[in-house]
Image (tube, rainbow, N blue to C red; front, side, top):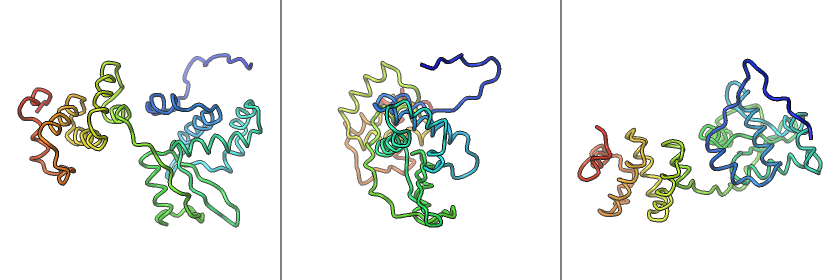
Length: 236
């Protein structure tokens, strides 16, 4: 085992990693190649400048640091790289676009973020020119609907044990579409609290929810949540 001498004194550069990586992805990743590849790509993308930000398979397969770390997995480094990428794409962590240039094929990898999804869509529609030919897309990945814990951390903050139990109960009580829409309304009204989201869900459950007006674009409709017994949750 190679020892680590510790982080040096003074200024040390850091790489930003989304909280969802630790709460959602890390517990689910059960393959060391996938974990190493995912973390390395997060690090590489954090150093990229400009737009769009991506890494290519050619770049990854020539990365001595990455391949050196994959050699310890008991199979060829490039085979481990390919396996890690396949798993990360299948999980939905990465988005892949197959391209061709001068008769040579390559693959571009983007993080599955809002910007990453928009960039991939533009590439496939021909709205973004990277000087490469975009090959036909693979069948779309089936991405699991974000659960209530993901929605909470994306829109409100760090999950606490007491709140987690309430979220579990709510996920079993209300339709997933209701939960997503309630979080969306809370964000749009700048009322980022579980109490506000829960109040919306409880009101829909007791008074009914007109799905024909599901988007609830009306200002009057949105502000009706400040009335009655739910008013204590809301600050004007």
